[in-house]
Image (cartoon, rainbow, N blue to C red; front, side):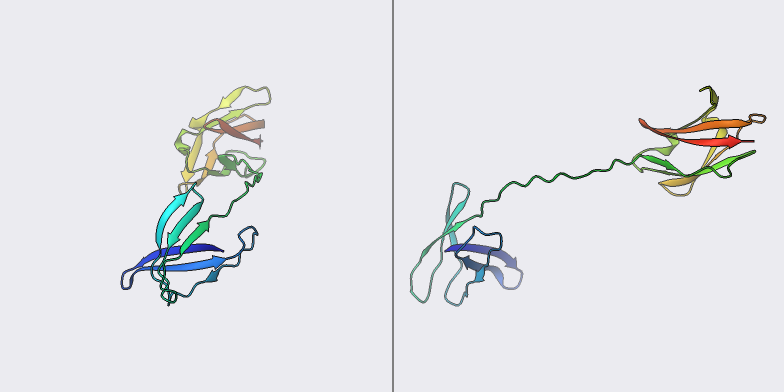
Length: 180
């Protein structure tokens, strides 16, 4: 037989313990039976052998003896589980509105709270890859500590297709904007 002992402290009753027994610890569905303590007193742990076998005694009032019990921990097998982890970008922007735009373009912006959004860089490039606008042409209205409304005020007479890039840390995302 195998035994399992639990100890806990109750502020009113003091130290309490419960003992359980089973005949088989090799299955994954172990059936533990509670031992009635009317005939036992608090067990005393005598020794731990090889970090897996616990030796303890307790007084048995029925037999008026101190039987020696051995408890063995169940051997667990290692389980390797491969988790699919999805990496999320630290910054997310909605589609620009209006599209096409005239004097301003608005985006809803969401960011990972571990980043300081004030350090985010907003850049606008034309189809030739030339930088035509930077952070100074944007206005960020923070709604809370993870989202806000971003408005780009393009310079006049710049009709065309543009790439608006949002960079934070080492990550970036880009949106296409049409100005007419």
